[in-house]
Image (cartoon, rainbow, N blue to C red):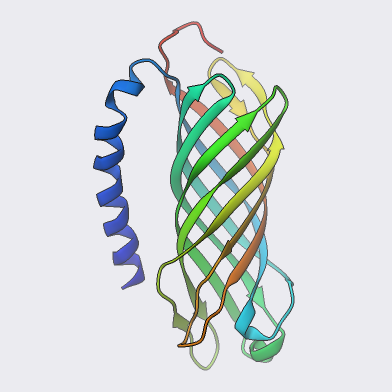
Length: 196
């Protein structure tokens, strides 16, 4: 059911972004960024602190440069982490968060920073039963370095931090993710064909 809600949200968001940005695309750089790495995290209701059981993380974002050094982004992120403490003890538990992220990214030569919102759901896969929460709103932050790999391709390693208010039962809760990522951005559209 969560996967269906996420797919529906992405289908609804894509045409809206396309219509709103049609004129901007003709005059701005558009890039596609893919990131992969490992995440650690915690879930507030588990009774555990930050869990040092990393899981895989993946993100794909479309980015539109609105001013030199400033771009807006929207995309999909999925991260997971293991849990051994609190109610996870002896349960072989894994949490997975997935959903939409959107915000702005600023760069000044080498360093970059990102700030935005995350609309995601949390799922628990554990021995003896799991669960899934509703989509919830939180924030998405990131920082790293940005350097050219050649014409239209940039490397963007960095760290991401997401915190989303999500619950697997009727009580209020949240999950936190800290991710180490390797990313690459490819320019797919530019008004200047010689742009690097």
